Length: 395
Image (tube, rainbow, N blue to C red; front, side):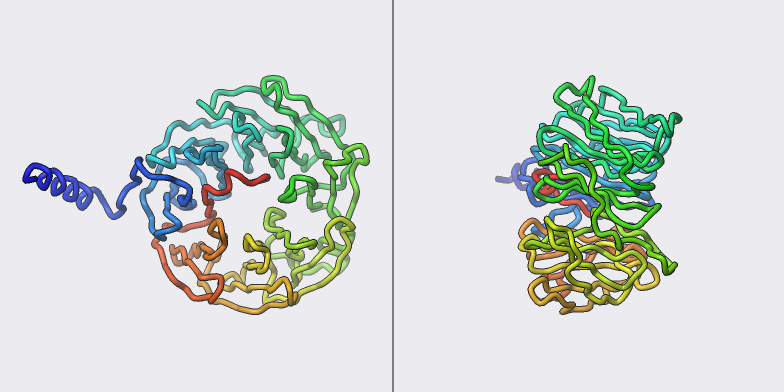
């Protein structure tokens, strides 16, 4: 007993002197862990969403000013896509950087394949998509986004995973949508959809994996591809979605990944307007316009789809609003703090985590009472990614 007490005292002393964070224990489940981007310091913190605490920090990840994360199927590994072309593999269980490669000069996100074997990265410079093994980040193939109209290679955006072990992405400069099959990842089969509209700037796939949509920067409307009927080609839906003829100031183009799907509707942040647009899913016609406090950036649905939480572009980026999807109206306005960047629901939706960049805080709210229940210290936080994303299409 005396020996055991000495060992325990030694361990406690080590933890107390090793820094502010308790560390990432490697002998527990990780279904309630997540990563939060610290954009200014090239680091992430690993958190426990059940205990609402920061466990450890992983550093040396490069430029994370527009970073995103996907997870392996077993949730143990996180793949971080940096703006500087860096691709990092992090062990979420043990809290350490496994390996890191610089695969391009300028990247804009990525995806993991349905079978969990391939990581894809979409690039601005030199354009195209690069494929890597999830085991060791060894390169598998490069899909050069070169077309007749843009032979030098197009910037690639809106890269998502899709059913049947496929991926889709948009070519910003060339105005095309491509689909690749990863059954043979060293020689992926490419299907091209041309003339989808001018300058697709972002893309998303619906949670059921049926629809791929690309927002158009060069014109109004949304390019839609029905993956059940790809032979029908591209359909332009919601022709009034965009900047419109009235040149309103657009403080930030809303992310398409910030669309929310609830019941039979899609909830879209309007471009340059203080509105949340509601479209009927399937027919894709505008059904409602919900007035908001500012220009929306993200509209995120609680897992039960009863609430939509919305954040805003500058100068209204200290606010959150909550929309009741049954009443189709705002039911709560919350002052979260300056520089709200991102939101993430816990897997069953009882809490929402909100990153407040300018306060270097992450705030946790109860979604039933709207009460602030926890505040965590995180350096310049932006994206929040929980491991439950490993089991969702398009995330």
